[in-house]
Image 1 (cartoon, helix red, strand yellow):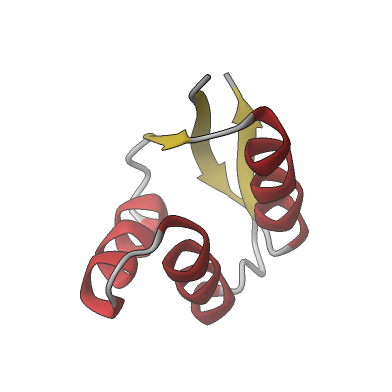
Image 2 (cartoon, helix red, strand yellow; image 1 turned 45 degrees about the vertical axis):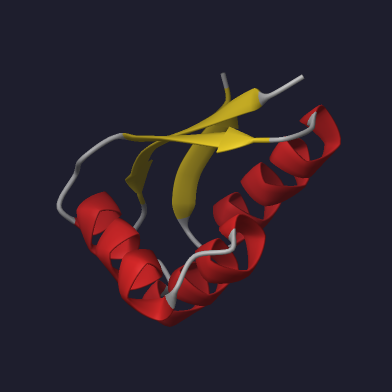
Amino acid sequence: MDQIVEITGWTIGMQKVSCTELLRDSLGLGLADAKQLTDAILIGTNQRLVIKSRAAAEELVGKLNAIGVTASVA
């Protein structure tokens, strides 16, 4: 069952390049799309990502939180 990862912001010191790489690898995005998503996060636009499994969603949230992105499994 699909899970939703909700990104609601970021903290000072967020690692932009790491975020782009993580989103690219986790979501199968191209570089331009991953950069665009990271930039949207930085300007304060909330994002909702559809992830295939609960375990993968929780893993992504943990990795995002570790690099300064505020995220949770919705």
